Image (cartoon, rainbow, N blue to C red):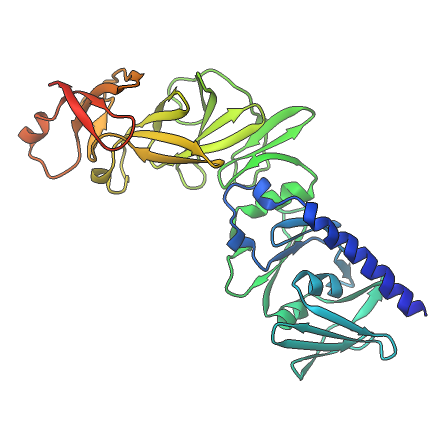
Length: 380
């Protein structure tokens, strides 16, 4: 009778945990760069927390435990989290789990575990702690055809992470997403994060970090431009504030964000420095200054537009491919006013198979259309 009560109590607890998943928070709400395929058939737990992520959904969890130096995980929680069927024989004190083509059999208090009829001996016997059946972590991988990772180091402390995923799935353990888990398990209020930057809120103030481990946060507030810096730039436009981050410690790319209070959206990512930002009506326009390492510059231009649709920004180049707008051959900067008729500014064909004389003939003032890849020469 006691065993029946334990199983009933645990089933009810599990129902509450997974029942809350319908209203759970999704990792997409925290992290810009994660996709559903990245998180499919995955689970993340921590021995220090009653929170887990199943397929990217945050749910209440049954905590793993560490006993005598071994990490033990809740068998039923993980099994049912992956969609397996669990049968508990109260008389025999045995558990049968069916998952995909696998059948797993074990008994409480016994070190033997059978997977598809093949037996092996676990380091620790299946045991019940706090009304929950636990087995050693490593055998979960064998039972469910999963890769299992236990991450515990100075970067994650005080919260260690257990990652369980498909063998050939995205290597979640290598993604910058791990930094976000660190913040979530610390109970931080994440306003925005991606592989470049994280913004949290503490005591009513926004704080940002673009360090590799997201462990150094500074106030994230509008400030005037500081000449000569290629990072931490703020642009104040008719559409509000834009923030330019230079990912010097990771990809060395330039990332433009729109910041509207606590709503932060990533507008564009560029390999070359973004030098100027303007808005017109509902779109964003910006100029980049070419440097080394720009792929296929003859197929694009340095004048870009960004449009916000369905919750995301999409970018495209304007004008003719291979052209360079807003700067002359001596790096002089030109104004580039925007009207309904287009953008008017200095330009010339910098890239492409042209002789020096042919290139000089392309120098002039151009009117670049706001849509498509067209321009017209206004003044040679």
